[in-house]
Length: 138
Image (tube, rainbow, N blue to C red; front, side, top):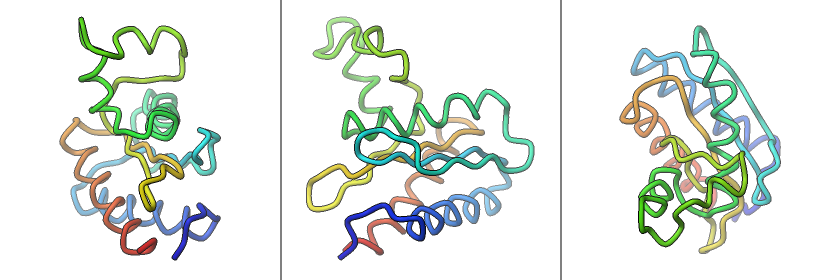
């Protein structure tokens, strides 16, 4: 069982993101962070929006350090939510969907970030990458 985000696994996940983005005809940016939020890999493909190059590493970071998707975190930070205002304590925390944690045996070992499309498009790519990750780490 793999539990480390080595270069080979990171490249495989990146290739999966690219494959799915081509399938849905979307230029994306893609990032992977380790479990502490340190950037391991970043790619911008085609004409992915420039803003995605700034946002995607933060999506991966947020998913890694919070051990949850950025979409889940956003729901917890709403007015009156248990994590309301957390993003004000760390400027790298983003509440924009497209960040997903990489979980092995219940432990978050990293995060991925996808950006370039609408929430649904980024999520389709993210879910596909997670399925590949889960196959490789089982």
